[in-house]
Every structure is written in structure tokens, then in C-alpha cells.
Amino acid sequence: MIVLEKRPQPSKLWTAITPVFAVVATMIAGGIMFALLGKDPFEAIRTIFWDPLFNEQFAAFSRPQLLVKAAPLILIATGLAMGFRAGVWNIGAEGQYIIGALSGAAVGLAFYPTESIFIFPLMVLAGALGGFLWAMIPGLLKVKFHTNEILVSLLLVYVAEFILASMALGALRNPEGNGFPGSRNFKDYPSAFNAELLPNTGLHWGVVAAIIAVIFAYVLFSKHMMGFHIRLAGQAPKAARFGGVEPARLILFCLGTSGALAGLAGLFEVSGPAGQVSIDFNVGYGFTAIIVAFLGRLNPFGILLAGLLMALTYIGGELASFMLGVPTAAIQAFQGMLLFFLLAVDVLTNYRIRFGKRKVA
Image (cartoon, rainbow, N blue to C red):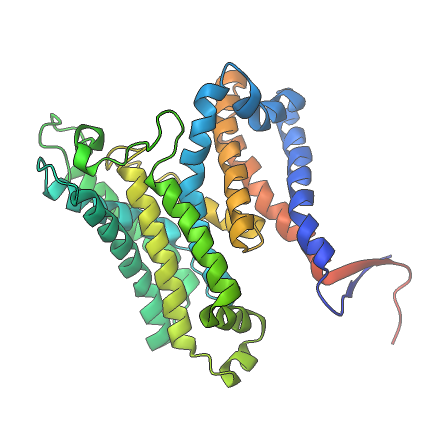
């Protein structure tokens, strides 16, 4: 029979290769799913992973979109990784993303039609502050009343979605939009628009912020005492308390930082690629970033690569839906398989498989 035997130490080899195994397993299981839907599995996988980068018909448009889609995922996932490493589970980044977008957009629209170089920086600060304050709700409740941050942060996502709908239909609605929901388009307001820094590259300030966040997280984890406290709290909570780690301070830091980064992601998205506040502005980046964080092994540079990979599945998934008629729900299931197989294969990091008879005590 098959027995799982606990390893004395986590396997460094399996830690490194499990994301690769998860991606391969996802391709195999996804191919089976596409076949059951009546689609050519090889053509579907090729369309998702190959065509956006190397098909001359689509690559000119798809390659810049890779950075556009990856930037918010990397920003949010980098913040989430800080909490996950410390055992602080922020599952509500989607809500923080929404509130950050609304806060930054409200500041920009408040100055319309004023032209100033200071408006966009103010929007950035407001977006980060909005996400930070929204994340502080589960943070303070956990510190003061020992509530479960998973439940509180997740339920706040639905509150944020109601606020988003209210703002799109009310306070932030375009007064010149003939009654249609949604704010003014930031493309028509240069001082508040997150434009491409280099034409036709997809590079905007959100991409720059994502790269800075990755570098900041790497320095924090490897060089700073707070990074040591985060790792210690996640690996040995009791030892962390004896080592001088303040749990309340750590919880607020991790939730606040992840909330601020999620808020920034929302601001850069609403002022750039999305262009306006709308009822369906949020597209699930906050939840997908959880997959990105774990696929990247909670490592900043791993998250950078995982974010690009997940962005590729977004773009390739849209192509597969358009070209092959693959249902959108199937693409979402395909993306979810990444986390499922990663967690499944990750068991081998801490356990080894043994074949033989069960030993009787």
C-alpha cells in the first residue's frame, strides 16, 4: 500500500519543482476538460500558452497586454505573500483593490477638469490609503477582538462590491453620460490618466510599481528584521513570541501593506487599462493573486514569474474563447486547477511516498 512518510526537513528539490509539476498537471487535466467539451485539447493548450506570444496574428496586441494583466496580479500577490508567510490570511484583497480604485478615482474626478502634474500622484496616495484603511478593518478586529481575518476580509469584499455599484450609479457617475452607470473616462482627462510610458509596450506606472514592490519585498525578506520576524512567525509562532516578535504589530503591518498594494493595483487599473469606474470594474484580480502568490512559492521573484504566467492564461483564455469557443467558465476552472495541483503536489515537499505494508505498532 501507499504510505506518506514525514520528511525530517522540507525537501528543497520538491519546493523548487512543484510549481513546474503543477503547471504540467494543469495542462493535462485542462486538456482532458477541453476534450470533454468537444474541443481539440492540443489546439486549446497551444492557443492559451503559445499563440499570445508567438502567433504573428495576435502577438503584436497580446505581448503588451501581458504586462497590463500581470501588473495588478504581481502587486497584490506580493502583498499577500507577506501575510501568508507570517500566518496572516488576507483573503479580501479583491475588496481592498476595489476601495483603492474608488478612493484614487474620487480624488482625480474631484479635480476635473483641472490640469496639474500633482493630480495623479495624489490619486496614487489616495489609492494606497484606501486599500490600507480597508485592510485595517480585519486587522484591528483581529488585534482587539481576536476575530478571524479570513472571514472578515472575505465578507468585506461583498461590502466593497456594493459600494462600487453605488458609486458607479451615484456619486462618481459621469454627469455627461446620459444617465448610464460609470464615471468619466480617464483617457479624456490627461492629468489623471495612467498612460503607457512607452507606446505599444503595455508599460505603465502600475508595472513600475509592481517591479518596485518585488524588489522591496525581496529586500524586506532577506535583509530587514521585519522580514525575519515574518518568517519566524510563520514557521515557529511560539518561538517568535519568545524572540520578541509583537503579534499585533506584525498583523497590522502585513494586512496594511497587502491592503495598500492591492489599493495601488486598483488605482493603476481604473486610471489606465479599465479607464473608468464601472459596475463590473473588478475582474477577480484579488482572488487570482492568491494563486499567483502560492504558485510563486511566496517568493517575490517567483511571484513575478507566476504573475506573468497567470497573465498569459488570461490572454490565452480570451483567445481560446474567441477562436475556439471555449466557455469562459472552463478557462476559469483551468486557472483554478493551478492552485489545486500546486497544493496537491506540494504535499511531497514535506512527505515522501513509501510503498509497502503498513507497520503494526
